Image (cartoon, rainbow, N blue to C red):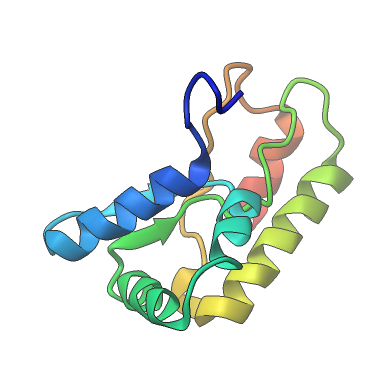
Length: 123
């Protein structure tokens, strides 16, 4: 309902990239690749180059790397693997090995399922 509030993920990413460029001491972590992918597809080559530099410098880091937040309360291990594979493939193709997530973490009020914790430990 943008007639009430112009709130969208692209505004977060726009402002974060700008803030990171302005202050080289800042770092930012990002989780859901589906939203990033959508934003990324709308960016100019110049912006993409800047973002790649931020990723290479470790100032923009992807955490978990899943396409989305899978439902931790009632999920099956196949869905966890599939959506993380999709996110990992995008990160690899766009940024190379430097964007590979080192931490399996996500915000979820339900907590991690047994399957998610086991799979994250094995990755």
